[in-house]
Image (cartoon, rainbow, N blue to C red; front, side):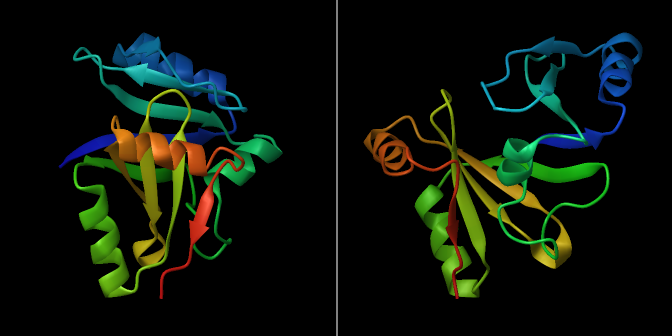
Length: 153
């Protein structure tokens, strides 16, 4: 498991973007075709370390980043912490055993399943690559919705 990225939401999105590019030395690169403004900024190892979104956003952004309710969604400038992992079924099994609520989403074009959890009001996302028949089935089953909510008990 490793830290994948931090998503930063800023009212001055372009200034923050320029800071990370001009001052920190990150490079703007590929970002899936999400229906809202944002940028993915990459480090020297070609990993997107910082994801940026415009805090003013639009309805698509609000729906995509906030699938549960205001008591459990990300707060402040850091929207969520993302961890990359393996073992999709194992993760879902552990969440069910511990009674943790979560919601899932499939990223367009990347064949990646995302599981969002909210420990003590911190928004965390665990990403699992799904380049398999399971992944294709998940994409097909979620194709009519931008996200799927599962309120595990």
